[in-house]
Amino acid sequence: MDIQKTVLVVDDSTTNRSILCDILHSDYTVLQAENGIQALTKLKRQDKKVDAIILDIIMPEMDGYEFMNKIKQDKTLSQIPVIILTEKSDRDTEKKVLESGAWDFVPKPYDADIIKLRLKNVIARSQVSLLKELNNVMNYDPLTEIYSKN
View: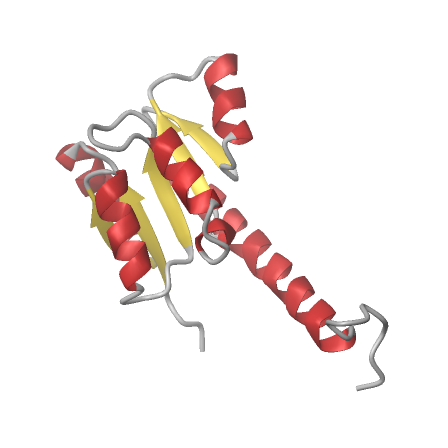
């Protein structure tokens, strides 16, 4: 039995959020936020574990770059994979987005199949990372960092 994953869509455009919700609702539980401030509030409330974030860069109040900077400072939130959606598809923007900590980048207008595949891939990669970390915690003593016989 597969538990449905939760995705937080952060975009100031009601239309874009609606389009993304339509694309994702059959495969994911979709939460929405209009800007980075709302997104941080939802994430910190942790009503539901968020498995991935789809984030617009250009937004009022708190843009995507500032949001990325804030979640990097929180050990729990920094583990959530982020896919950036933006109208700017030039090399410099893509580089800046990836340097900010995003796991992937999708230029607008976006293709529904591409969004679904990239989202599926980042969630799978994040789960593999978590399993490796859990394996490390279970196999190594946290004080000595030596292999544990347990």
